[in-house]
Each structure stands twice: as structure tokens, then as C-alpha cells.
Image (tube, rainbow, N blue to C red; front, side, top):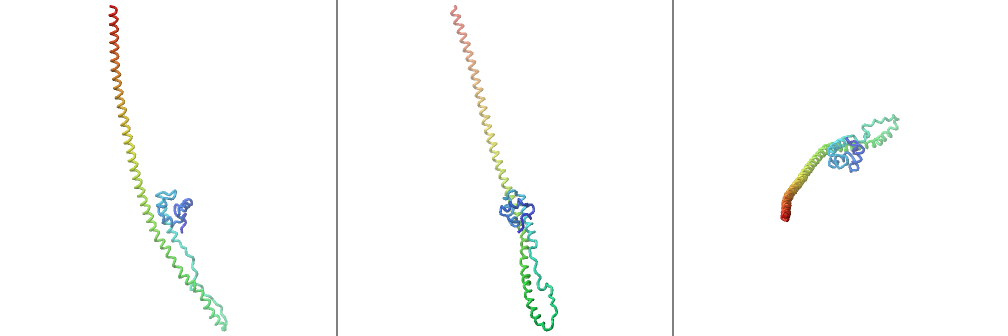
Length: 221
């Protein structure tokens, strides 16, 4: 597993946030993709795409690093044992002991043959890293397209709502203007009536004064 801080653009604080979101290492981060990374606080759409690609690179670099223990030297590679010369009478014992001491040296050979098997794993990871990166890019592209569609729908809804509000405001203004016009018309009619009533009252007053003057003149006569 590759540490999260090995990913370009990931510091200690962001690494803790990723771990809290269930992403413990660079491999899990690359597999999660931008859609999951965007759910982590502080990571937006563009940064999620960049971090997913960087995580794939870090995972590939970590898989390519050598992680095998050094092999023990085999019997063929071990330096030849030098035995001191002995008298002729001890030749049997030395020849008898030589095969016995050579037997344990065959074990490293079997171990050396079994060790190369895990070497295929880093190659498989290295081959899978570009696929993970491509998958992350596709996910990011789909997420960007969905975000663009949502933004377009939201803008369309907002425009329709604003148009409805403007229509209502215009209709209300028209109603107010019509009401004001009616009120002005009524006031004009009332003014005309008042003027007419004033003229009638003035005529009546004149007639009353004329009658009074006539009565006085008749009374004096």
C-alpha cells in the first residue's frame, strides 16, 4: 500500500480527511475516482480529477518499487569450502562427512526457485494503473457533464421563475394604474357635479334675493 502523503497535492490534513472518508491509501484513492473524492470536504470537481490521476500515478510508482528481500546465496554461488589436508588413514571419514555437510545447502536452491513467483504482482498492478486512471477520467467526465446539465436546468428554472415574477409585477402595476385612472375619472365627475351644484345654488340664491327685493318694493308701495 502507498501512503496518501505520497500523492501529489495531498498533505497531512487532507490525508486525515481522506482516511476519515474510508480512503486509507493511494490505491484506494485511485479506485474511488473523482465522484467519491468530491464528497470529501475541501475537494471540488477539478481538484478531484487531478487527485485521482495523481493517486493512480503514485499507486503505479509504489507498485514498481522493489519490495523483495535479498535472496540467500545458493550452493552453486557459495564459495567452495577448503578442507585442510589430512593423513591417508582419515580419508574415509572426510569423504563420508562431505556429502552430509553438502545436503543442507540444497534448501536455498528451492527457496530461490520459489521466490520469483511474487514478481508478477507488481507488473499486474503497473498494467492496471492506466486502466484505473482512464476509468477515473471517464467518471470525472460523466460527473462534469451531469453537473453542467444540472446547472443548465437550474438556470432555466430560475429564468422561468424570474419571468413569472416579472409578469405578475407588470400585471399588478397595470391593475394599480387602471384603478388610479378610475379614481381620477370619478374625482373629475365629482368635481363637475360639485361645480354644477354650485352654479345651481348660485342661481337659486340670486332668485331668492330677487324675490325678497320684489316683496320689499311691493310692501313699500
